[in-house]
Length: 420
Ligand code: NAI
Image (cartoon, rainbow, N blue to C red; front, side, top):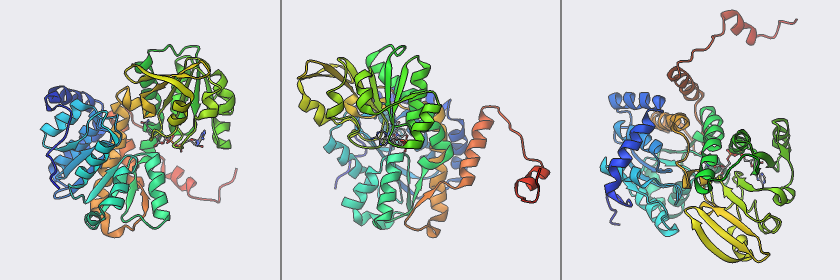
């Protein structure tokens, strides 16, 4: 197969991309310190990495750190709408094999994954497991080179665990998503802020006083609910898990089934990692003018075929806003084609949280290189030392120091004899 050196929207966008990558770096001090260290030691010399990630300014900083650590990196998008074209061009100018264009169709999206795999990876880096599943389904001949992989998001980790349980996963994966310094910050504060940002950039709607329905009170959902509340919205949470529903109540939110919330909501946002969460029965109950968006990984949380079937007319109102005129006379507005709204109509997570997520990625890659012969074909957590190191480095970058246990306290915490 003849693989181009890169495939981007317009290579001339590179100057803007370069500046924006530099801007993100200001907020990524932990990754910068790993980058400097990689530059000196070259721990990834000779390692080929195929990465399927959202092509953003933060990803660019990760890719450059891996490149300067000695790796040969190819990059494709992990979502057809999340690519920042100027960033893709800037990386192509840096000699990275980038295959990503914002708005690419499904066929091009998967072609770009195939191009990225032509880098003959020793390590795969995924956000949603599309690269790993394409490798396992279509390019099994390349699997023998692979020593391990990393996975960035909840949905990808769920899929890779399913592959492991079914005995089809062919190499070890590190679940970056499950590091404390990832999901507690990226999924919660990152998705929280950027999802609101995406909804506001697409619609410019006032949130104060609106009824904002959040489906899924996981790490992303609680971030979205908290930030929407902070903007003055009345937040309703819909859940299927009793414990999470209880948490939402005690965090001060109203909880009810979606069939009830559907009648009142002004804005709906899904972040469940599940499919067909908002579907025909809910659309039929919605108020005229309701806005629906998704911040979960795949565009399956809102049942778009149902919405189309219920509609007599569909038109694009503005970028990332589609109007569905239902046969019942009401209008529903779908944002960003039901894809990750924070990465489609805004810029994704703020760099300060991606600093920790991508530091986990960089150090997990180094861990895989050093330990590949000891690992089985399983999904592993990020080693605790890496997680703690990143937290300490982040605190240091914020100028914050913390207390230490005294020897007496350490003894107390590991003993059982003391009573009152
Ligand atoms: P999580 O597992 O912590 O939370 C998901 C929640 O959704 C759970 O509490 C579950 O009970 C609930 N849920 C499942 N089905 C439901 C249904 N039908 N109705 C209502 N609630 C339901 O997962 P997390 O980390 O919050 O991730 C959620 C999704 O967001 C995943 O697809 C993940 O990959 C994605 N994600 C998106 C990001 C973004 O940038 N927008 C960033 C990080 C993750």
